[in-house]
Length: 140
Image 1: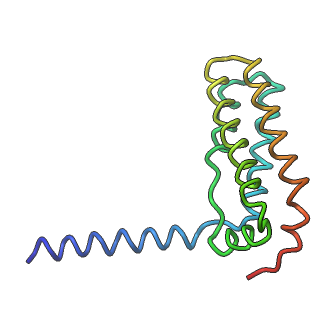
Image 2: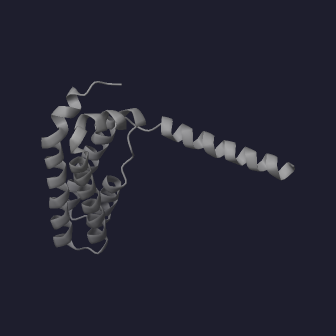
């Protein structure tokens, strides 16, 4: 009986923590602003040839927070039938950022620059394709 109560308490605590974390997720706009700041940090680190800072900034890009559920639904509605294209851009940016971090840890500037170009291309292509839809999408 006692172990059942302990287990129920643990489960309730885990569920509360998960729902609190979900409720605290940032808006889509805040995620994009954070990514912009991390990309600026990355560019600065590249100019300074600061490999540890490159790795840190790239990891922040790769592991950015997910937006709040309501914003995710709004974004998916805005991209509509182009959702796979949107996900492909997101994947390219994520993968490129991970590769930048790996190259930075190996002090491989050529690799950093190659993958930085991939990330920038993914960001710019996504913005060119979807920014207008995002800014016109109604808030829910």
